[in-house]
Length: 396
Image 1 (cartoon, one colour):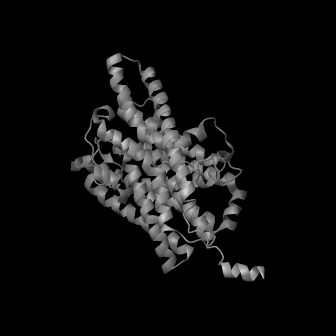
Image 2 (cartoon, helix red, strand yellow; image 1 turned 60 degrees about the vertical axis):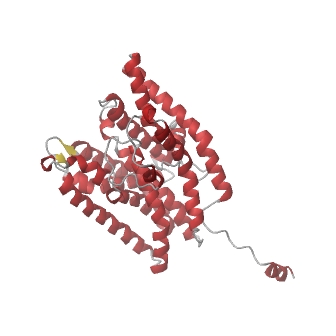
Image 3 (spheres, one colour; image 1 turned 30 degrees about the vertical axis):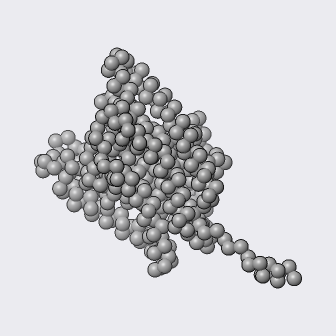
């Protein structure tokens, strides 16, 4: 998963506290869910453990906004996108630490979980999530595959839209059409793999939960927020006058979606719920996008909150996502042999996950970002310097 911190540079000066807080919440939710599934076997954190999988959906929305904001901000200023710069910046941001963790899964398979990973080329091409069955090594990289596929397609689609139309409304229409297409796909797959009575429910993850066709639309609401912010700056600024209402709507819709998904995402004895499967993912992403829009307003509660550790947790979240599952497996194996208590296992999971994430950020992520910012400062073509003759004429 491309759990990139909100800033676009290694430094802290451009960080946004509201985005940091949302990102910290996202990684905490994912950690609580995975801890229940792969370590404790019970909802250690109560209902937050059971609904923690929505942290991935929040990451999708945040990633759609962050990459879209970079792109649309420059395009609104009349800059020309450089495909080479765009792809190299994405590669230097996501690949180095991913490759390191991937190497550990292939070189130390017993230590990292003991399961067989898909072929290496599936990881290197970010197609590992295609018809992925649960239980394979490094399976949680499925979300990173979806984001990398999205990052590959986004500049191409943006380029075509500018060439064919150039109208902002058409971009919103296209996003809406893609969300509808994903909803239709999920409906078809739910009919095949969603119900226990059909006996095909074991393929739900492979064809719906991990599928790019079923989940990539969740990046679009965040992308829409970025487009609206940069294409309609006056209207965006006017939202500040209504930030309390926007905040209330954002929290309210997220709370409603969490309640519905907590109770109807899976119905025991029946299977995966129709509404949650077909519409739930898109609606949840839209609810998170409303919360995101609220967090971006200067006077909002999310923007004003300064929770100790949230910025640091957001900074380490990408590495933390990659390593927390194998660390959980390692500690669980040791706990059986050493007779550790449940509280000791939890404490060790938290401390070791944070420590390894901090090291990976310091030793791998930060140097790679520094190199990226030095070689490719942004994703746009550099402005052409004035010709020497023109300079001479101006001086004369």
